[in-house]
Length: 183
Image 1 (spheres, rainbow, N blue to C red):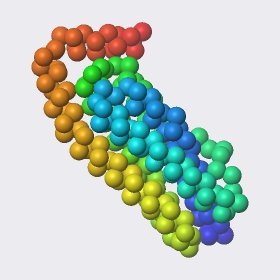
Image 2 (image 1 turned 60 degrees about the vertical axis):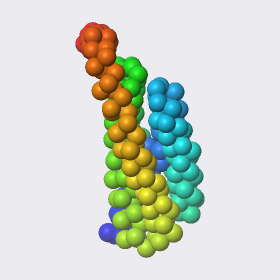
Image 3 (image 1 turned 90 degrees about the horizontal axis):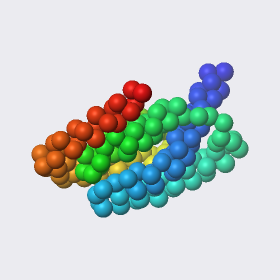
Image 4 (image 1 turned 120 degrees about the vertical axis):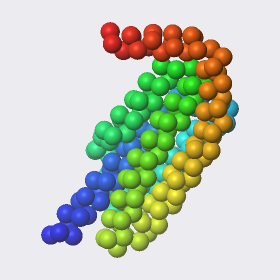
């Protein structure tokens, strides 16, 4: 009985990850388009291709269990994607890029937590092939997070420089979007 409940939880976790990754396949092109930095844009485009691979890996796991990956909405990812969209609207230039990196890193950390849980459950259920696929995705998520951290060092400095050059324009833009949200 306990084994069956654990397997149900495992499937539920995988469905959550599948929906989260599917949401990202739709969101990443918007982030790439909004990025001011060519390096950040390229990073989002690279991660989009990886994310498509993550979806395929999850589909492989579901197929091996004769399960349907659909049927669950990942509300956590939905909120994180929404925050990324807000950053696109609220900021511009390299300051927007800083906000996009922050949003993307929150997504990566959320995914790392989800994949870490799924790997542990797969191992507990003796699903070694699943665990191997999930660990590969987990490592890619960690690499993406590290790449975002490296990009942030340059982009944060550019944003600080831009803010010093145009403090009135940045704060005016932020006030406008803040008052728009309050309305």
